[in-house]
Length: 229
Image (cartoon, rainbow, N blue to C red; front, side, top):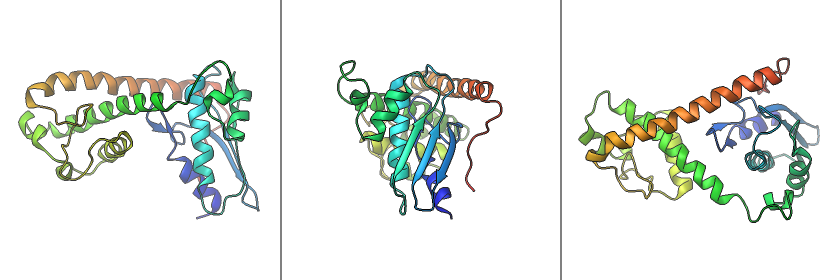
């Protein structure tokens, strides 16, 4: 695999915190260039110039970290194009500063709490999909009694476990298949109400992702997303 392909693969692990999808599948990576010396330049684009600066910063900063972690990569430059705070974000990311470094005097601290909030939302939405798949062959009591080791392999299950690790929630084989916000198992009597609420989270994630893809296609009709080669 070429170094450029490895960098793009690494960028696939960078998640839009609001949509819980990789920036590569969303089409947010418009170009990725790797020099003969291993220096990397990545250009990011978002659906609108007014996309929230905090989310834009997280993706740009995470992209720089992901690309820089690939063996053989030298200097990494990440450029957020066509965004109303692009200059501030690009400068701060380039020097490894936090979000407050991009907007001194306008914000305090980092974005850890925001990232955690959206990871929790993503976990609820992903678990709703897992639960609906289980409900085809299992009743409520059986679903609530299931352990992680009993879950069928799927992309949603894998992402749920990844989110649980990031949130510090139990993810071992004997942990509950579905968990509440505190990591405890969901009780059978609570499952229907929990699932109704969780479906709303899933709908929000899917709808927002579809809107972003449509906006991006309209904004950049002649610039397809970057793909590995």
